[in-house]
Length: 142
Length: 142
Length: 142
Length: 142
Image 1 (cartoon, rainbow over the protein chains, first blue to last red):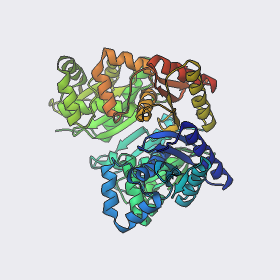
Image 2 (image 1 turned 30 degrees about the vertical axis):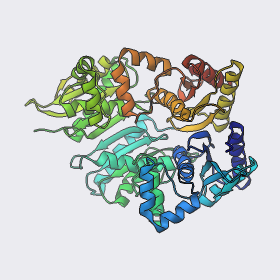
Image 3 (image 1 turned 90 degrees about the vertical axis):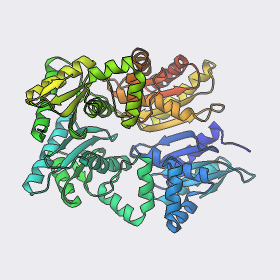
Image 4 (image 1 turned 180 degrees about the horizontal axis):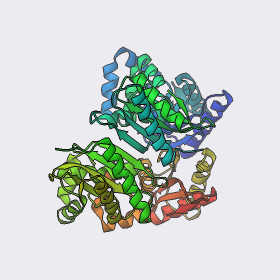
């Protein structure tokens, strides 16, 4: 399995923030987690509220731990709220099951980590994450 | 960025309580948090129940950490309950997403803290917070 | 049993801070808890670090919950560390067993609450608490 | 009060890592927290273990919340272990009281945040943090 290197993590964040600026989004916060759900890199733009680390982390953490991206988590939450509530408790309250938690896959299709973006609408957050992930040569699953 | 000084925090609480008495509200509890969500000042009036600190803090904490006042949090909770449930877990169970958690902005529009009021209806709680915030020269977002 | 009124809580804080200024102490944070360990009032002076609420609360909470002031808690911690460690766990990690957690007794000798002060040395913190408690007509046990 | 901007946070991390490479240190992880203890930026170098985020955060968090850098925390822990144990519980288990948690002060001497570095010896971690902090125009207190 490949992994997200330090350089790749920085490229993902730089490009996600660049995309946010190109689209005129609100200040973003971006985290990159490895395949074990542990932080590789994080940045919060000026003007973002102080709690954005927890939201970005929660989006990415749920994605990588369940192998299920934010959009699928949201659908599951709407269909079966108690499952997500209980999964969240099992993961220590670290899931934020909405778009913006994006799986990172390598060329073999393996999940090598996840990116969490927060600050604008969930859909725009996800778009910024995708831009970063693809710029680093990985495949994004929103 | 400006900040809420000790004197300003005391003025916010004094005026919020004064407003509560002028409107004939039930006994109020009022907290002022700084821009990082940390308590600057708190007062609980005689007759208020002992758990009011946690409610006042939760209203203000969610506001400042998400940069989203109580009314907006309530709307999000009604539209997408699982998001607020999960954000609450990510913040250690410290969010109370209803009016009465009021953002404090300085003249440049930056969030410099939040005020949480509890004891009467959520709308009256918010009105008391606004009176305090404006008396201290800041702008309130309910 | 008497109780600490809202007015008395404010007087305790005002006088504790006044004493801190008179003695040239570092910026102080002062909390007043009721007989159930719940916050009645809190203030943090300009220049105090953001985590001072938790320290002030911990000093006062352990005092009122065990009926044992900070000095006695410290002696117990030095003699029997595991007892204080386990009591702290039982109380949800809310004890800070050093001077500056001061019991408030009424004229009948009953514990009606506790005051927690932090910011200077533990001994000076306790002295500021005593000044506030006595100004409000109660008896302090450090 | 000044604050650590997004650009300054990135400069701190880049320079701390550069210093680590110049000194031949083991792979480092570096976090920058704002004045409220909330993450602004984080990077983990290739080869660092997955739990390094929590260690870096803990070093910086205790520093900014208590207004006490890692060296002073370590001295307090050695003199009065139960105080640090209890403060850690009050802060939700987020303190790592050793060098490498470095306070960031602005030109007026105010604490505007903290940097946490982990990966090599505590002393080398602190040296890398200082290099980053000074490169961004702030004053470091180890």
